[in-house]
Image (cartoon, rainbow, N blue to C red; front, top):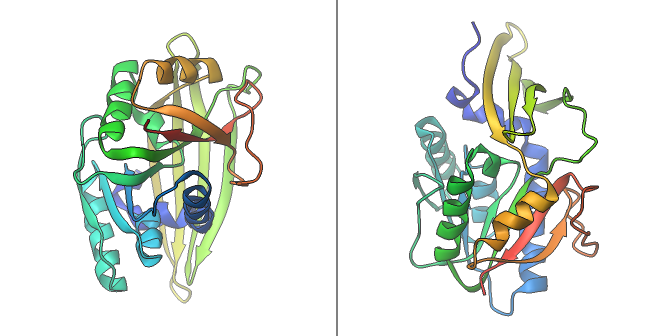
Length: 259
């Protein structure tokens, strides 16, 4: 029987490692474009195994990251120590954690926000982030919106390699309920490591994610006075090409600001 993906955060992070420099470059670009103050303190809620925490710390940011997963935070602490880097990392809940002193910028990429399954939890999270930002501070929030013509049984598959380790990541939508705004996804990682006597491992999880159309996210954001929408990008992170928030955009990175 497959083990949980969350028990092996290093393999999960490996599957997404190609995204890390793009996300970190986007933090640099957003800070330069939208902030009239130096961006030093960065917060990542739901940081998982910390691939972005490590990258931003290596670029000189003062990073705070938290996650509910004990294995992920333990793994992140080991990575930071091994790299000789510093960051403030701890276990915490996205719906209520607030930090002080406040951050200049927060980032939550790649659908972590959609793990908050109710409107109340999503609103509480956005309120907590607003309370954790300085005035004028930014929140970069990335997740997939639901186009009106999406295939309800969509799937994705890709392979990532590092050294002698190969991870094939498969994602499949098992159930989609528009009225309840929930979809159930299955994540499967097939891991092979080593050459002479390769070790093989299958990791798998199924869990629900909350669904958002563009209009639904706008309504949620309108209910949170502590954050305002500045711009929208896709996952190409082209700082010179902000997009229009409508039903045609799927891979969405919102630039939100605390007034």
